[in-house]
Image (tube, rainbow over all chains, first blue to last red; front, side, top):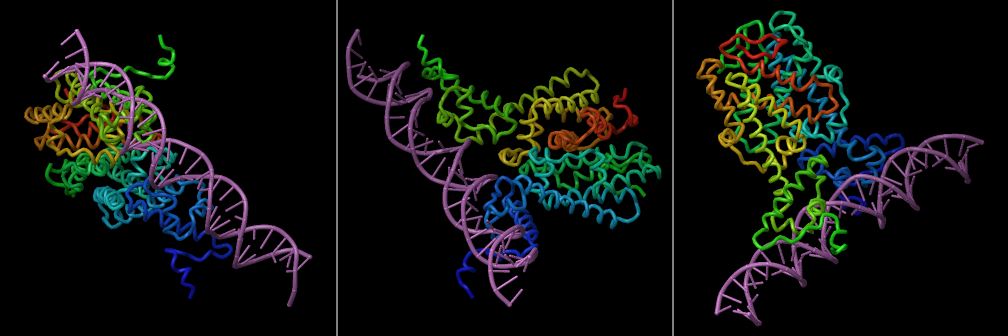
Length: 223
Length: 223
DNA sequence: TGTACATCAGTGAACGCGCGTTCACTGATGTAC
DNA sequence: TGTACATCAGTGAACGCGCGTTCACTGATGTAC
């Protein structure tokens, strides 16, 4: 075997004709790893991505027009994972509509805690926030949000939640949960109570309507 | 008059003995202006600050150990302004305790909208967020937060709000309002409803306890 | 009152770095005839 | 089957920039004696 070829860290064979897309996927994967490891998108350099993939840095430009697009592509992909995770949590929560909404909120927070850097980039960074051109309707149609809005609608139909605009109700809840998460991420040294406790308080205040409010101490859903 | 001296933009006379602090203030002011104009702390270079002040860039290091400290000093000063603004709004709101809390929230949002860049740096940026070493008790002792927590306590004593930990109650409200503001700042293209409408919805859900909840459409405080 | 000295409040030039991106080029692979 | 050509999938080197910061130095101002 040729020792020179293996001495270069991460050396990879050139893709065959028609397999150019494979490098694209490897670039996305390496970028995602580096974002998580280095803690921000600015700290991820195109050179570092190329080195991890085992290609030259100009090769990135065969697949992405610039660095910002690459970063955004990574975060967008991972946000779709969040949608999946929320959907799964709601499905696992059983038939109680309030249970399902609470599960969705906790799954959202769980994703943010597990992927703090990506959450920050997608939700707290103006640079990439400006790249997203969503309308509220688009947002409600995305994975995760769809199930939430549907469930809110069902709860309103069933008389469990006060009748209101389900998208707006969802957004208000979303903003409140996001506030908790983003405070935690932005102020790591602040001695906030445990995250899920704050989230439960927040849910207590948002998920009621026709039925009596749960006690201040408890987060148990109404029967 | 010497024409050469005036041809240099922003030229300033050297401070006299014992007046070195004046340059420090001018640096803070110029930095604050540039942060607001350029839209982020990264875009503000030490050279640009020096040019606006009319001094050399090494002169900054006579007053601040590094750039991060300078930026943080600016934001901290402006956050104290926010406290003052909240206090004033609460005083102007009259005697009704719920009115006062609603006024505080709207003043908070108003400050964030008027100083979006500083709000982002102080509340949504991990770099500078990590510099802040507050405890919740410290936070509650700061301008703005003090009045809010006191008012919450009074409202609980008066039986207007359900009895609970006033600091924790304040933090929960704060997080929810912050969530709305930070979504607006991070996702400028998202077609959210008007900010004060979202804030009123949020307050409706947080500012109740012993008295009946205000209707879904209205934001009017209870009598 | 004179003068040597200390200090304050700076300056001008440069260091050194890493970064995103571009440019000209290459070599393996496939294709037309 | 042979061969000229086109294309794909990259590479190596360099451009050009701006930045935070340091270093050696200066000149005005005040102070001790």
